Length: 211
Length: 417
Image 1: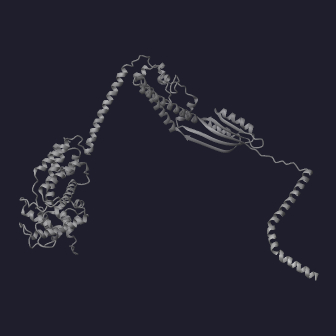
Image 2: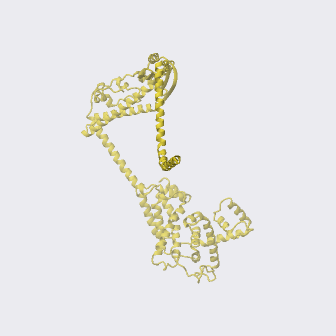
């Protein structure tokens, strides 16, 4: 393994995730480090988009990688590493939501949007928040985590055809929301069609409290 | 969003753009897309939506995650047994290492022990005679003992087996090969078959046939194992014999026997025991080998008394086994070398029925007896009848007695008037 590392370092982009995890299973710590460097930000972003607290998102991202470290032998080549990794992340997310649901919320005092968030990001965030929960999850897994329909079906626990229809519905809805809302506007546009009835929805806390 | 004129649904187009359509549908959609401006515009919209969605970037996480993961990776990597299979294999490899070390230490100890004690057992004795190396029965596949240092020190008078067994010579050392074994070996070159035959012959002259059997058997090099004759005075005489005939002369012997009379029943059978024999011989060789090793151990060790006793017990057990297997082997060889014939001779016996004519007195006597018997039978029959009908008659008599009596009186009165 030591002899292969220089090659690995020279052409990191050509080695697939699956090769890396297999090398890691054989004992290569550097293979793991490479995987970590590839997925560190995406996993953190996964949690950050779905939870309110950045600190918590970091902790869970760390937990995800530690879980991969500890249970490396459980990875089997028939799944992509990405779906394996996000599967672990999804489990941690669900556990976190269950835990958060039981706690007195604290969750309501959600972090205000980080100052680094662009206005565009805010619009998208708000628009996505207005989607139905499953639709939201499906579109996020597709757009951000870039999982295939099959992987989304497995992770979300829904049939494949449902993934497609929900993704389509979510994108159509987002198209409405995003094209009608003028860019750079914090608050939801008054002209935006209101889903879920009632007055204009306030800036919602993140999905952690929605069921 | 279906249209009767539009062959591709929007949702399907979305799937195509996502790369999720299977061939050949994806090719069809691609072709349609080239031709349909409407769909191209929809495709552009979808692209724009995705781009917009992905505008939601997330700031990079802090370095604490990096640091902690790096530490964790390093920790994992430096732990022993970091191979596929994880934690359990770590501990397993530690166990393996310990086990290996223990085995090596044990081997070293054993080697030292034996070489150390061996130094004290140097002996000077004449070299083994050539015959002792060759006298192993060639029936046993065990090769002659190689000239180990121990073997060289054992002279002809130093037969460990012979000594321990009180001087009894073991079969595998210097025994002559009997004819039986030669016959078995001869048969063994192709295969080992135990042949048996059963013959039942009807003979006219019983005594002559019996003598002839003995002649036939002797002529063909066999012998009679068992013989039993049954000679009742006025019934067929029978002879039952078990003959042992060398297997190569069996057919000739059977032909000779069949000429003694009419063959009523004939049965031939062969049982193949090659595998059995070969297995037995192999096991014998192993057992002898074991015995030899045990004897060596006994000679070398000056250990505890309990150990010595144990070895001696083991030697005794192995020898018992060897004897048993030897007996089995001899038995097999015998049975292969000599076929067994189960012979039955039955005399052709016809009983003569000759009744002398009856005399006059006999006839008179017979008639009287028959007459008497007839009378008795009749009487008996009559009494049976009475017994049978009697109760019924009495019953009716009782019933009809008074009316009949009245009628009789009336008739008498009328007659008197």
